[in-house]
Image 1 (cartoon, one colour):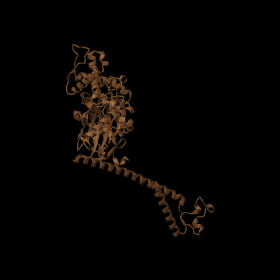
Image 2: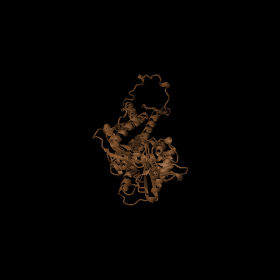
Image 3: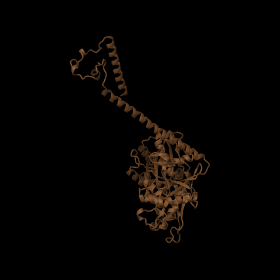
Image 4: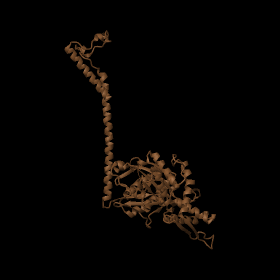
Length: 520
């Protein structure tokens, strides 16, 4: 448009110069009105202002009403163009300021040796165990219970009054798996996670009120810091649905509370522990990472770019607790006594022994399962139970249940990739889940810089092997570097990352880390 306007004005100026020169030299215009197609119509032409004042205009020019709209339109386009550039520049400068502020806060947090008055408590509720952490100096650490335990059991026994609720180790002693419809209030241990995964508002309230709040209150009392903020980590699928409800419940117990998606906190934890490098540029920070979190009752696969979750899939009934459940099934099958299903004390005893056996099989290939006094009152001559169990047999049982029961449900819900066939092994299950999040985030394997494995359930060799093989199937062996922390650290990474949230910052699901000044 500007080019055409310039050409039109130049043409007008050139014609005017030619006409002036012709009249000065020849006394008449080069353009002869006698040869004009408008000859004979001069009488009907309107009289110009110059002619009315007795001056004859000796050249041709466009009327103002023809030129002014073009000039106005051009001016508006120029103003709009420069305004658009100015707004983009403001956004870039704001992003630069945020980046520089984050780099400064990160450097100060790691290099400062002074003890801060502000305490940050990171909370990873988990599906079975609750973990708390805090950072004092350059490295975060877990907050143990008053009994010295690193993890807190997340189950509760409900009562008529709040004072009657039982949690922690006392609830763990009575815990066993059974169908939800068979549970009786006041007698059975309930995992709030089972209600939370169904996006229940009661599940959110129960998790915060009876699990998170008491643990945080105990930790705050032990830290004795005047200012404390709580950073709660929640799976992305649940956070997208119930963020407002969770924040409302958290505000009743803490003045400063922030909710962060699990995979984002895991990446922060890997960075603060030196497993992933800190980004040196904005481009490195915006690079995509894949986080595979294998928990207790479920797992998740997420794509994270610039502290924002772009896509995530939720794998229910894929986790370390599937080992416990399958051992319980094997014990019940071995006993051949159906009356045990009606004895809560025996079920809790079997669950506790199965949990210990699953942990023991992490480092051993064969174990002896011993449950003392399981048949008390049933077999007086031999009330104890003994059974040999091998890791290979248990892994086949767990993988068989995944492919026969879990995979069909996940395929029916559209959680796994439809571009791949139905998974027939644990490796193909994780490959399908990874392919699904890559499809949803419109990423290719070459665009993923890191693949991080976290979660307590990943300590089992079946899941770690399935993770490695699934990544190799999509990314190619030896091409993509997977980050696999030490076994003891995988369950803690998310909680440690939550407590490493930068000072004077808060988190937004849409834009990631932002300065606290913008929160208002």
